[in-house]
Image 1 (cartoon, rainbow, N blue to C red):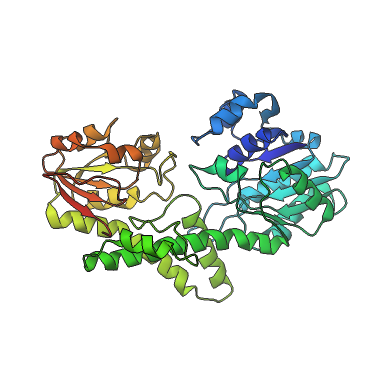
Image 2: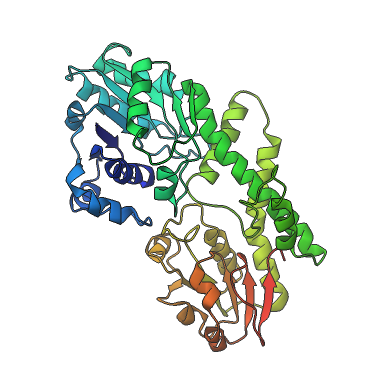
Length: 427
């Protein structure tokens, strides 16, 4: 099939590479000319394991443009643009609606039927009540020239390609048989046969939120348990290992630490809280999930305070990306950690193995960003570990350069050594 992918952020860029790898011809559409140029040059616009290989191996099936007219040559369009958060946590649909309007203008001159699949995260009802009318203004009534579907993604950054190729499930939300057939054809070449959930658009939209919010809640719960374990001198990781043996609980997302971040968990949790309040329902449990997550960076710094004063002293922050194998700092727990250290008057030196330093420097310019962990540790009276990059687990002699070997580990990645004052956040 020939498909168009509207928006080339993490979701869209991954979708472009993966669909091409399945044998489809893919046209990426983005308003950012630099992003289009990157894709045309055979390079994904962000760091993601294996994605560059897919772009290179399938270059003959990938093209990019800023012109929405390209959708007229395709059978199906995926809307993958962002739905940013407003101040109250609710989603701002303006980017999706702008894309829908441009898409509708292009479809008005298309003679054959077209499927529009919305992958952008949207509150239930938004597609039917806002997206469809925008397309209809130019393209005509839904059902005649086009049909819409909600097709959420469930990929995690750092493993997005594998998650796409071997999904736990596919959710196809539409009441139009033609759109359903199109989506089945798109995903038919997947190497496995994942469970397929065929449902309505509202249900599909809620499934995305439910998935992310449940995982965020699971992490906050294990962090809460870890905090209690710490107070009693109990290793929360031993406790979690036993918990994970219960198939009702499962072992994933039971690594307690400094909390969750990224683009999805924070935004989707806040959006669902705002949506609930919009219907006069108080989401008390979801409020607590967010509250625990906000507590963890403060607890990390409180542990550091127990061992060393940081005013006018150098403190190393190891890890800036919200998780390993990405350079994304959205929702990174390093942000409140850096802010807290600066409030204490510390001189912050930070290191991340990815390009995260470049984007973090725009938000926190008064930080020394180093090109190695050893450079960040040099002369520091303390170090805090925020991201569990594997290389941090291999550090050893590098700690000798510290003025005082005080390490507070928020991810259980550093090996304690003789002469080091080591504190685990929840163990």
